[in-house]
Amino acid sequence: MLDLLVKNARLPGRKDLADIACADGKILDIAPAIEGQSEKTVDAMGYLVTAPFVESHFHMDATLSMGNPRLNRSGTLLEGIQIWAELKPDLTAEDIKRRALKLCSWAVTKGNLAIRTHVDTTDPTLMAVDVLLEVREEMKDFIDIQLVAFPQDGVLRCKDGVALLKTALDKGVDVVGGIPHFERTMDEGRKSVEILCEIAADRGLMVDMHCDESDDPLSRHIEALTYHTQRLGLQGRVTGSHLTSMHSMDNYYVSKLLSLMAEAGMNCVCNPLVNMNLQGRHDTYPKRRGLMRVPELMGMGINVSLGHDDVMDPWYPMGTHDMLEVAHMGAHALHMTGVDQQKSLFDAVTVNGAKTLGLDGYGLAPGNNADMVVLQAADRMEALRLHPARLFVIRRGRVISVTPEVKASVDLGNGPFPVDFR
Ligand code: FE2
Image (cartoon, rainbow, N blue to C red; front, top):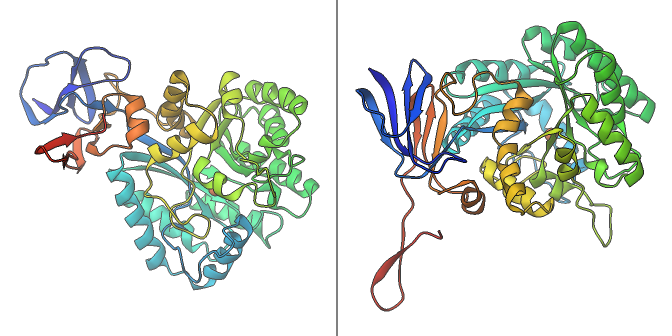
């Protein structure tokens, strides 16, 4: 007896429709016309079925706090950090949890079943850490949540920053974070990278730093992050997030840097929505885009995934936590509208993210977790164009979210007819 049978699924890269049989939370078989008894059957109606979306970079402690205590008038990163500092003393555990759980419901509805979220560890009470550890536990049947100990005010710049970060890790936070470009000097930034990588190596943890989120071409902490990854044998376990200064760096320097990053097995997370908004703010015209060099990184075989980063918080006033919106912005801002590039962007919000997070059992193949999303689209390019409804979101063989098929009808004088933008 199967737990779930998904019929008439269109799978990426496969010509004919297939059925997906699920039992005990795993994918048992993928083949045309599977027969057999199943507790539940879902008809994918020839629509695209993919592995779930992966959110590689998020801030769940700040999400949905927009306007509290005030709106970001300038729209800049620094005013955002200032507003967050003003909000922090008034945060309550109940408020953080309510907002985080609400965001989780949005994420599941959009088919995002894995989220790496940074959590601020520079608050001496570590309240957000405790709350998000609870949320991680409560949501574990629905979403894989991975927490990054993120010293928002700088691990060296903030009083007791290192001790607080270590306490957060002791409590069960998964990944070591950092923000070297926000330390007081370049040297302190470099030192913070060294200290944080050593903490991760000692504890056998992964690293994911906010790194060089700046338009300053001389912000080169990615170099130190790459160096210490190599030195400490952390290859494949370290992620550089944002890396926006790479946009403005000297081309000759980048050509050397990319090889070093490839050698170190660095993962990179680009956040197109938020960094298109925050970067280039000190420019007159032309205004820089300020995104890492994704096509070039991918061309070197470096794993790049995408993050939403923020949804309605001090840094970004928009969003519904739709990873296809993130990829759509990436297609434009990174000049990645070529056919293969669009597929690469779809990978960046699915399989590449799974690699960044180190997820086990991810992907549509027998033996893997029975996690998948049915999208109201024919293929990945159409999904990227339409940001379509997630008709069914399935986790461990169980349907956990349903959105009805969207059907529009228009009448231009000769009676109504359907329009589906396909
Ligand atoms: Fe971030």
